[in-house]
Length: 386
Image (cartoon, rainbow, N blue to C red; front, side):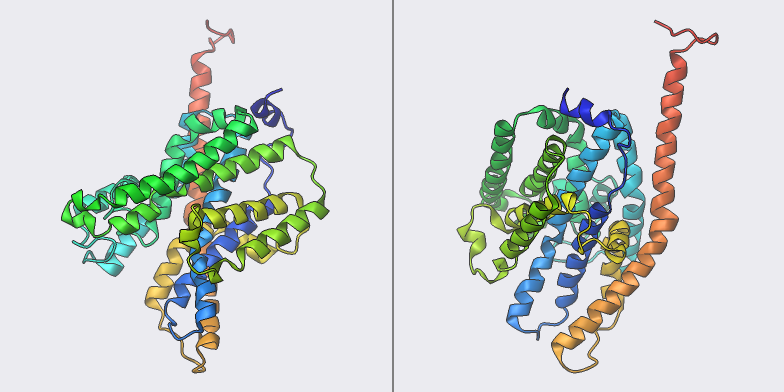
């Protein structure tokens, strides 16, 4: 029996797993950490190095997203149309609200992401979710919008690339993974060298663009798909082994910030190196369901993490920087706690009032379309047509 048919035949294919939300929770906590730390340049250099790698939480989001989407796709055995409908109602409503809010909050002036300022082109591209295709649009309208841009490109390719990847044997799948790592890095460096050919409005953002665009992040998504495939083919892994893998993955990731020049020493680059570590952590939690890393608070934070991704930028923009003790580390810790509490509180409301209703609405549209499609093939007396 094939991998897809094996998963589609499970009795409870859409069972929710807390470890997925826990991974998302850790991802957003990392992202909030790096952005909060940027308001405290006086903290010790060693701590700053660690917190700077909180930016890699986005790669954890990508790995988790690919794993979850592949689970859902196989379990539901849905069409590409159903997949796209589900995705658009999952991400677009909050993102469109973020566009309006951040244009009001930040205006449309020049920035490192849009050196000539934000115009109608960037706004329209962002609203249409195609902002990942141009340097001064990818993340200029909505802070952190580049991650949504890369997710959407992955969504667009998903129905075409996932079935053959799941059917492939491991050797060609590993070749694909290695190829995406090498080509993504080398093509990015090559094109960045020709950025002078871009219009002046885009050239200034090209260096950032080629580190954020989809080809550089594609390996993270491939790793998530590989995780799913492994979990189906090897459903019984001892929890003791999973614990060891978790410890080794964390031990592998922790010293990376202190290895000067690693981004040049390793052809993988930082994003991909961390994505490998995150994939190992995800693997371990997949088989170690009683892990202390999986708790209700972090699971709930993971549930609201999509809203939190946008909300924390607003919180950091609007809140005054706390200097309660005069000790930068303590002030940073206090500020981080305040930002997390406010972000999770507001995000819980937007999750319950915006995200979940829109998800249900998308599911209702899919159900209605399936019902109409079914009725087209059934005569009134109940005989199947054709």
